[in-house]
Image (cartoon, rainbow, N blue to C red; front, side):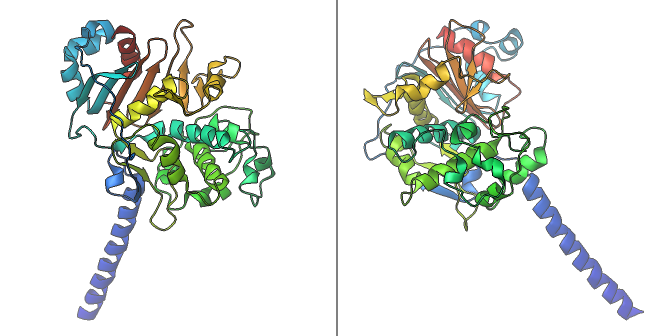
Amino acid sequence: MTKKITLGKIFLVLFILVLSSVILIYNETLRVPSILDAKFYTAARIKTSSTPYYLPEKQIALPDMSIWADSITAARYRYPDFLLQNTSTTAFLIVRNDTVIFKRYLNGIREGENTQLFSITKVFVTALLGMAIRDKYIADADVPVTNYFSDLKNKEFHQLTLRHLAQMQSGLDYDEYGRIFQTLQYYYDKNLTRSIYGAQFETPPGKQFRYKSIDTQILGECIKKALGKKKLLDYFKETIIDPLGMQDTAYWSLDSRLTRNPKYYGGLNMSARDLAKFGVMVMQDGKFRNKQLLRPEWFNYCNDTMHRCREEDKYCLGWYYCIDDENSDVYYAAGFNGQIMLINETKKVIVIRLGKDRGGVDWYPIMRKLSESV
């Protein structure tokens, strides 16, 4: 009798240990991604520019909140600093032309510190595509994916081009918002290159827009292969970090220590003030400090209304275009939990908001009105 009880206890302990392991793995998979993930998971360090550039600063007081915030937000918070402090905001910058006119760092993040930009990363990857075409590593955006992945068995990959990937028109069966568990699994995937081979098509390429991170991941993988022996993160430093004079160390989150594939769809960790420099370059049609880094026609692709996506999101090359007002040219890049860089090209104003979460605020209309009033 004593022996049976002892064996029973042993089996019970083993069962609990196995169950605990499963729960830990399951919780790891379902863990909500954080702007600080690069501190806890594998990431590649990207050194600063050897010739750092500091955006000029001329601080101003913001207009009264009643001008740029909705009535509920204005009544609840009353003052900009109170709004930012109590909405999980970690960085808030406003740049007019090339000058920082307002900056705040809050909630544990100091000036110069990097946080994960999530899907704002996508506009850096599409910019790298433009750079690679400029430097003739890639012939044009209509090159098929099979130029770089010749062993893909699904015949529809032969019709899938880099342009389709940049425009989120791949037709791949991936639902960013409808299948949250699938999205989280992808975020924690330990071999993102392998996931390309398991991808299936829902519609033919080029027929339908649907926002999905796998498109940008495949695009990044193709650019990496096109560069040959040159590493993509080295190319990123040569074409973006150095010319823009990035002054703060950045990191690019990787899928694992073994495979070390960058998360092209959302793994860039960068400071707000360096992000602002990229925004200035984009706002000036690829020019920064009088040097043309990207050909203006790369951005004209999105400015031409014949090419803009006509679906609800008005998505182009990683940017959301706001063409409800024909008299202003406003677009923004957005990432998980309220990471936003908005560019009002008409007013020559950039507004950046980064944070631990959205803080219960609809940031886009607030940032747009603010960009029009400063």
